[in-house]
Length: 216
Image (tube, rainbow, N blue to C red; front, side, top):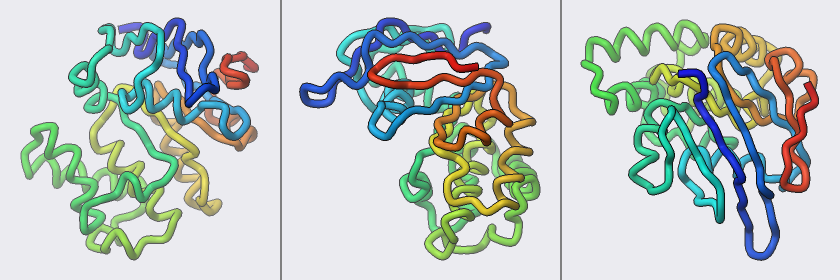
């Protein structure tokens, strides 16, 4: 598989305002793409369209070498592409950290023994082993970010879509995020932090007035 995501001629409108205007995007295996743009430019909208949460007015969406049109087409996409929401509270819905990390692998059919190993591995990597039994509602914003990322990592996706992953992180947690990204081969990151994107991206695009412009 060379192309993970291949989008052509994407058009999306919100009311009468054109958000994405005949947009093309390719994410190939090995692409570490950073995406910047002004507020309201459609960066999050683009991620939601890739995941099938929003339906475009026009355009061809090929993900994992299959064209995706209907809701049923995106079931596989959501199992194999990991989305980090901008708001971690939209992502964490189990009572404890351990249960939240376990949710994805269990739904992929992993055994309880396999899931235990996965939890231990990702918790150790992200430095959140001490949080495993903690109720999610008692986490700080930065801790929620790391737990949400750990939950995605636990599903071993082929590609990550990360919406403002460094937002709300202290320097130590941001360093852990950067360390994690350097172990991954394929992702698309939306961020307002240009220096952060330069450190973790091999391509950078700007989304403005519905179009993508390559900066790096």
